[in-house]
Length: 219
Image (cartoon, rainbow, N blue to C red):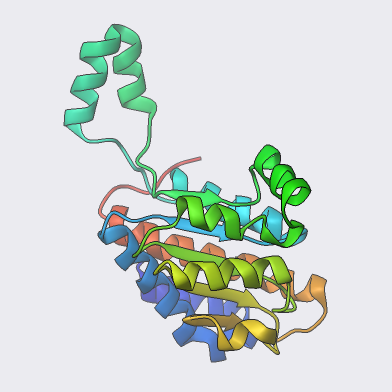
């Protein structure tokens, strides 16, 4: 399935998202550009959006719908260093698209919350991880989560592009994001139900760009 077909399939299944087709396409293109420059993606959100952050990273860092074999040069080095086990690693390891969930660092998050300000748990990580050309995917169903807003401000200051996933109003994030995908719902649970197929489609499009010439992964 090519990227146009992925988008068409998404809209057929979720016609309420048709007005966001351009934003979804632009998001995939922004991430493709990011990875094309050997940059990385940071992701953050609270509650259900915390789980979504981890989910997105999981789809980017290993095969999703396409096989991602490591190149022959790495396979050779693995075998030279690790012998039989190295050869096994060469066959099993997959190319990852570099992504970090800022929600996953529990020791760091609690240290920031305890020592400075709980709203800075994501912004502090953007300072440490973020570099110009990287991208931040900021998720907030209301668009008003302070710790997410602080991460956006920090990301913009450090030269990252910012992609927002929000609900219908967009909240304060509307004026702060380079690309905003504000799904047409206001109730938190309903917003989050739309976010999942949206980011699945985005991850599929990014993966297809880099690995679509390979056979689909069979799981």
